Length: 492
Image 1: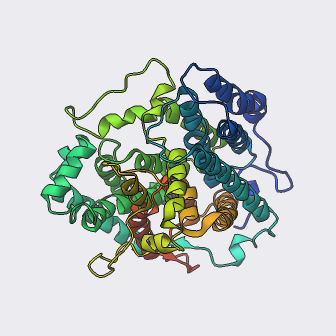
Image 2: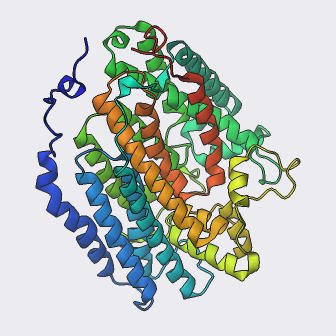
Image 3: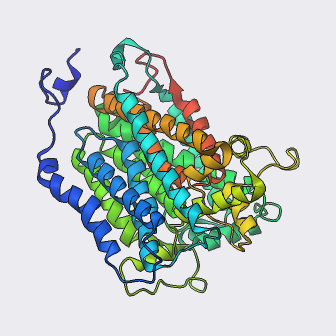
């Protein structure tokens, strides 16, 4: 029986989607807290920071700008998953954390160039954020898509979903066995790395990690995607909730993901991907859950995220954070994005020049071995770190730095314009597929939450480290996706 999709959700066809009362109650306090109170609290802290020069004021401007935009995402009438993740990252990693470093006078990674390069980097970050906003505005003025029922929509093939489930189990079990059993996944990332080396998957001198990346990738990505598709099926289909195979497969995948995708043996940004993807897939229509996730994300990133480094090392290699301020851990941990962008500018200005797309080519063709591609670029963070003389070159390379290194300021701005446009289109598609089109097998209803979570990794960089899981995820999606409208072949 055909009914209006809005009426199916208890909304009269002629009514607009109302703004939740919660947003009205919290609008002013939230904006004040994110764009005013927290930046003001940071600037009021004592520290040995440098003079309040142009870089300082640009950093404060970026923090306030990102805080206002994040508040707008939280209070938006419709959930904007990808845009919300973007502004959450910018606010914490490019705003509050480096502002704290400015005030305290301590940075996690040395900034080797002149102060002017930091000022230029901050100006470019703001330009990229503004271009992102312009791109999102352009997407809003695009005519609305035709009704979902009148065109081919990417759906999940029922038969091929079971193939993906089999691949997920096979990949997960193989990864567990190859890396030494389930216990090592609850030890530390250091233990996983040692298992990789012991299994002969570490590459040649640390320059190539394709073998370990594929073992870890096929052990984690198919398991997560299969769980997301089955979760979507179970929460939207009464027939699935009556299906013993679907329930059994989902229960098994929960256990498998608890092993291969837990926060002990995985990078923190990957665990964020898993958490956000599961949350927005399991609660596709809850504005409260969406707002709670963004606000909690700020609190967790500032207060908890630095201390999750405990799971990187074993007990002998772990050095606990010792601080007298709640903000001090932000100066000694992972938030080196602004500093590394400044270092990238210094690296290019030193004579290296822009790469004219070669870094991006290495990201796209990451699977080509170095024995075939002589002179294949290393990832951008390693490249700049080696030039800096760092012994630990596992450094970030934020998307701003990646685009600027390849294409310069014009190319970087154009890139963020396109990214903002694509993010807004993805958010609109997610709203259509979850609010107006409740079909269980809609691919976009799973892919967009996954992109939302993975965007933290893409924004932090380097892109080369993120490419392997993207490729494996694309293969899994190609496996299960169909454009057939035959109800016998798709999930329902």
